[in-house]
Image 1 (tube, rainbow, N blue to C red):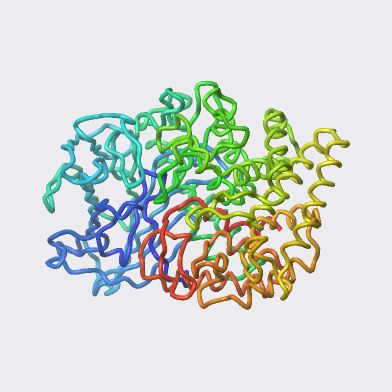
Image 2: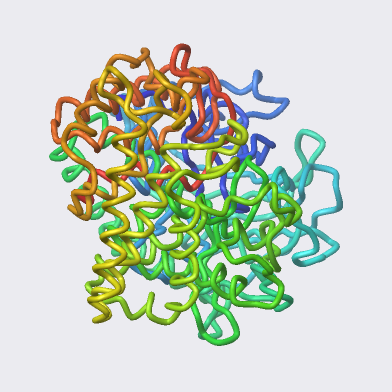
Length: 622
């Protein structure tokens, strides 16, 4: 990867089991929130100790390996080091293969370590990983960790957990798991035990290298989610499998699953290069593990798959509709069952007696407690009525398209009909309300929000058409066309672009919601609409992207790529997307990909590790 990634993925399974390197792999490893999740990697060459991962208080006393190269694909981070005697290759893999639900869920990550002599001599080489109590506590010292060796066929392993197991006892954003058990080990014979370092309890696994060795990191969270009062387990447990069985199986199929992952990553890269550029491919490769690791796949008591997102460093909401909407392209492309798993909780809640409104909810809880909306305390003024109705209908319609089957939408037809009627009543010129870009505040007469309503109405028409209701489908498509024509007439600027709000002449905004008009080929908006918008975007382009709208110089990564797709010119697409690549390449804030940053400086404005980066994949839908 040519990009200097803003943070390097190391272990990336779910919102709790997610470990990154920031400035350097030689610095302290952290949870995606930035709180330390210290893992130390040490190699001993003929008895001499060297540091290749992480840092502690002794770090300055231990010589470092020299980092020669870092390569990243969708599933693996491969780091090559050297010293005077050997070349060391360390390959971290989180095999969350989107096409297979079991691998999406199984909480086992790998690290294969190998070496080659550089001086032509034979060497005694062994590798040790040490993992701190921070992996099983919210922060070090908040509780007491303990460990014990475990008996797992084919491996040597040790597990660590909090002495007080309060499973699923709280929710929050900037919090980490402090229940369940972390497992560390290696295939074959190794030495495992507990240890103390940097004022912390920890465990280690040390193994001699016969050219290479396979280590693993795993986490059993016991129960994964509270879902309307029920404690649910992860998908990988649905047939009664234990963590010990999952680990044994995982190390046994390492080469098979890694080969599948590498094939998938290569396909994404090739497709992205064909549609855009090498830089676009790198954005997708870096985004993949982040998006997957911001969800948790569980099964409800009726056997339904639920794929719960966490709105990371936004407010910690779970199953957030306007986060699912931008993340959807990744799942529409490769596994729509996971997108259905995002929508099922929303529909269950919307159909319950607890939801009192005639529009769609914003969320279904705060991760990992999915018991009902928490955003805005359910006050009407903090709802996003047009936003969420449009989002939900567009997503159902998109699923119907990629599956060529509207039966999933058909299960909820009455509710979707009610929401489409809401869009018809209020979507042409939305009242003073907030949209998904809620950080920008309330806005009346929002043109881009009106486009979302229009696409929602068109989306429901497409669902009805697939279900055989041609008469109503035609009527709704007629309304969508009428509203689109009204928008083109009433939102036009003198320069051919279109306004941020109907009553704000000469303003602009990214009209990312119209991307579905392009994907569905509904032709609701004329060519002049898209030509005028793209001309304005290129005029407003700053070194690191096009601002979201006239009010500020910040943008959103997902919406920038969606806006780039409005042009049929590959050069136009690459022009905008290359600016996003440059933003991450130069960004000073060393966190998992932020989606909200300033276009003039590339400085992060807020948010990190959010699932919305799944939206970067949208060009592959064309």
